[in-house]
Length: 310
Image (cartoon, rainbow, N blue to C red; front, side, top):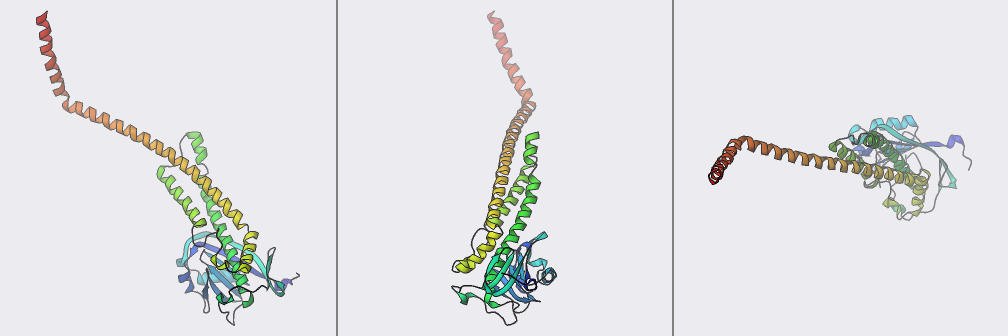
């Protein structure tokens, strides 16, 4: 396909938080916006269209960076962001509309063209007349957008995990050189809790990174679009890599925690011995004179008896 560069428009993805509170965010959206599956759909914002996902990501079609930044300022207030990122994650592709072509992903270019009939077209929302883009490819745009949103959300998780791993990277070296973990038991437990939070965000949240969204179970065409984008962005391989890093870090910290537990048990034994010693000393100090008199008093008659026998 040969597309005129003037026809090519941007597809921008922006992740700003670990999660959005969509019901609260929806109140700041322009009229005509509505919920669809796992996103809030904005049919028109300036000259483009947006999908806002609960995983903290926004995907815009046809907006430039300034337009997307303006939408964020006006609609995404701090109150709707959970675990806001210090540095947003972004992804940029391009799209072109050509009814003579089939809808597909070709390199970094999304081609919006004709597509097979959907199994349940009635499940799609009604397309308003003033929408920025055609309703014919709405479902395809949503499928591509959801994969893009997952990718940038995963990038944010990868970045946070790398920061975390850097913070604990010296623990094995410290253990090897000093024989001590380098962190207290409480600090290790806190670090382990952070690690479990990473795994929860990766595998257990509603918008996780490993499962196919329910919407595509009955729509193989849309599943194909979603998978093509997910495969192009290596989402599965990246999820496996993140899980492997979390597993390694968890095993390392569990080992360190066991060492601290052993040290704690040894310290407890010493404390018990010390307490027993203190109690013995206290008894000797308090009852020592009486004990000495009793011992000496018993020894004196015995000595006299021995003397008489001789």
